[in-house]
Image 1 (tube, rainbow, N blue to C red):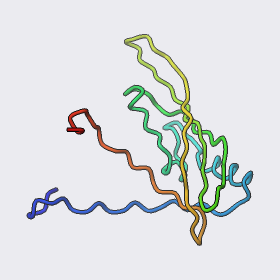
Image 2 (image 1 turned 90 degrees about the vertical axis):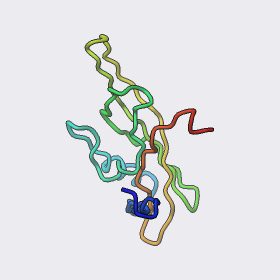
Image 3 (image 1 turned 60 degrees about the vertical axis):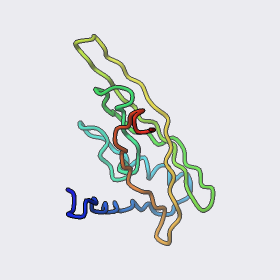
Image 4 (image 1 turned 180 degrees about the horizontal axis):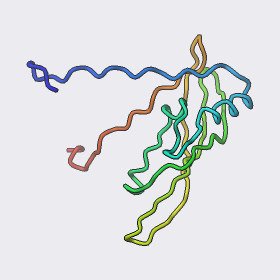
Amino acid sequence: MLQPTGRQPPKQPMPDITIPFLPRLRLLEFLQTQCQSDADGPTGPFTKALDLDLTHIDAKAAVDLVLVTDVHIPAPSVVVSYDVHYRIVDGCKGVDLTSYLDKKVTGRRSPNGWKFQQFRMTGDRSTVDEF
């Protein structure tokens, strides 16, 4: 909603996701447990930090599973590699496809643990935006 001045109100910052400091392999296991899934797809707390947007592939693509594949800790940050397994089903076109994407997310060291920003999907862009 626009304020009377014509400016939009500032967006409220999303809270960071804090992950405890753990040795690399234990951190990998911990993050995988934080990416649990149910019938609606990934629901774990860490998934809020991950880019699970598939609209650039297909509007009907749905995430089936998130699999944390590696953790790299170059001080003072942590890089988490993950696979987004997805499925596209379109009965009208006879499409039933499963695949996955490799992605990464970076966290930063804080006094309380590794901090990750919640993923915020950017709005749709077009070539007109460049002009």
